[in-house]
Length: 213
Picture (cartoon, rainbow, N blue to C red):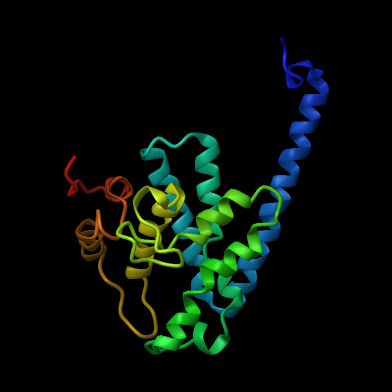
């Protein structure tokens, strides 16, 4: 027995697909506007998000993600810092080391990001990836202290890319690490902070082969 979907005329199905795709693009454009607003406050965030998205796309292809999942992960990577719109200027723009209280405020940005994205059509799954992109494989991350496979795969991929880009970017309060130093740190933390498969895919993308097969 044919499903209802199979009984929809080709022309109508094409039109429905077109409308769905248009809605998805509009949702991404709305969410991207939030990143633009953050970029006006902190120029680091916009360029950082673009680089992280590029890294995640390369990692996802090497990890064999299908087109749908890869697209979702790249979208989440582009928007992973959108929650910083809820962080106060004195904390977000501080040039020195954060106090424990200030770092506590920064740690709220994944939850803020989830709240921004969860009700936007087409971004519900991406919002969960954003929510958990600061989790650690060993359960010592935030906000949920999730461990291992309980962390969404997309979040595990973003964690590697996000950390690498942060380490290799100059900030007012510290000098950037070299690429080699950063890759060594990614490898060292594979299996504790980072998903080993994601770490391996990233190092492979960077032209290295220091993670055991």
